[in-house]
Figure (cartoon, rainbow, N blue to C red):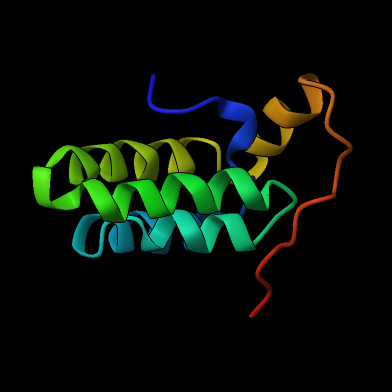
Length: 98
């Protein structure tokens, strides 16, 4: 497992997809963006910085892609439901509204 699920901020599907694409082409930046969109900021920033630093060894790039996939898996209503069942308050995360 690349990270605890409770450290991933639930977001909408569009923003989660943007984070995944960023993590594929700019490892760590999608993780940092996801961290800034919710309440688990420090853990996400730490993961993102570690992913950036480990990218030359390819470990950071693979980790970043795995984290981006988990962000997409926990996006939308599924992510909110998971975090609600885990004890988080519903509606705490920031949602992107165009």
